[in-house]
Length: 277
Image (cartoon, rainbow, N blue to C red):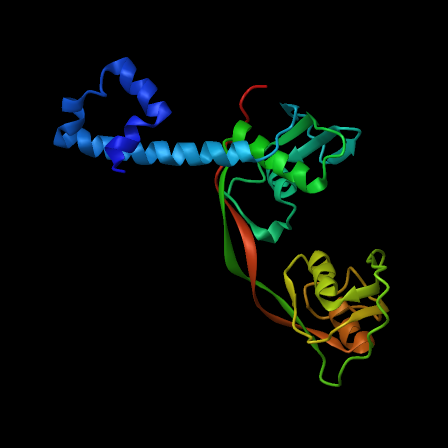
């Protein structure tokens, strides 16, 4: 099917062309108009694909977005009984919520984080967190005209490896009872595979951590470290070890700096302010 035939079947083009009398055979067969028709066909195809992509995502039943001008730096998010409330969050934070990924996995225009907004949205009870993220993506696409794509990039991070003298932890019986507690300078893992340990370290360091230990099974252990000391890998100023030193001394593991392939979201464009409610 050629572009002119397909173009005649494009609903958006047909409406415009009929109103201006441009769908005639003679007009479409002149060289200049043929080039324009091909270009219009490609635009139509892109618009239809974008419309289908947005329609495929679940959407909030209703959503209100208001600019927050309080100058308060405290933000909050609450979801209860089919209502999502997001208060005083930056546009960058909204993008992060929409994809459920860490800051380093988002490439966005330099002017972000942008303004702060309040959002109140309704969704069917029983909606899963993954579905709510898709709803946020649809909301940002519809109201902020967000255009994005995904790609894999090499990001500075760490490989979790076994230290020179070998691991100091051993696999335990797997009962399927996973638990993680990483607050207050404690790093407690219960029946966790090393891939999940690496993900927990990713959250702590704010950089990607990839499991390269080669250790199979699940592990239960407790590690103590100073969360304010040496998180960047710099020299320590305290008798309480950094996470880097604690991993090696207490667990026999090590973080080796390297670039990690990571799936990122690239925000190609996004409006600074939303369309009106």
